[in-house]
Image 1: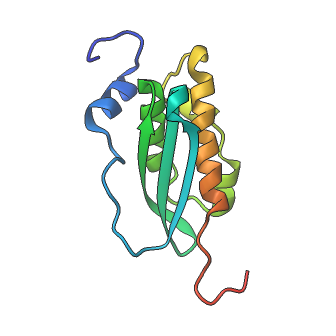
Image 2 (image 1 turned 60 degrees about the vertical axis):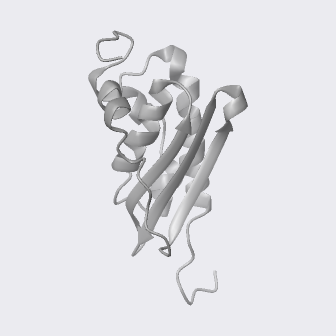
Length: 131
């Protein structure tokens, strides 16, 4: 993959290093989201640590093509500092541009978007909140 012209430099780097694939500490408030189906060739699971109403760290697990895996990795970096509303509004096109994803793979990025938005729906409730 190191010189495969189908993948841009950032996709190749993320596939080589897999930033965001490391485990997160346990016992901290997290927003989790998942989308897709491995049997259909695309599955993304995301977990974001939430502190003071913002994402402070994220991790991913993904099954699919290199563009999907790289996008899941990329989003764990990109969404640091994001609020619940920003996760809910996040759009896959940002990853497509940053990672130079070809149009034929845009559908895979929708899986990443669905997982991000699922994490927004699973945002942790603040201690003592009645909402």
